[in-house]
Length: 128
Image (cartoon, rainbow, N blue to C red; front, side, top):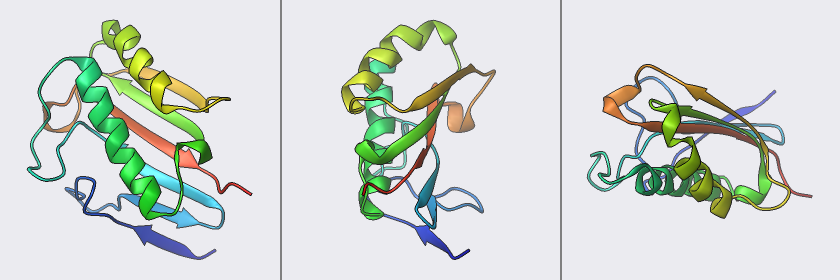
């Protein structure tokens, strides 16, 4: 199976040996994004709603670089440092996801890279 790395300057660059996303056949595997501003490479401050919006904007940019959108998302995994942030994260998340929303897992974790409070990864298909 052919694999193609997807990269865009409109989302934070990889900070290690990984790609922003890998396209393989009709599937796109997006690495987890945190609330980094792509221009400054610093974490966006603010509440969990603001941070979640930045994460989803970053993922939207990676999807766009692969010619896809949130409508193509099949599965997401959300990682929260504080599971009590679930409600606020969920409200913002719902504004980004079309009907029917993708399958999702939400996991409470002890810590995330760079001190982030929320990280989301996803798998997308290809509409058609």
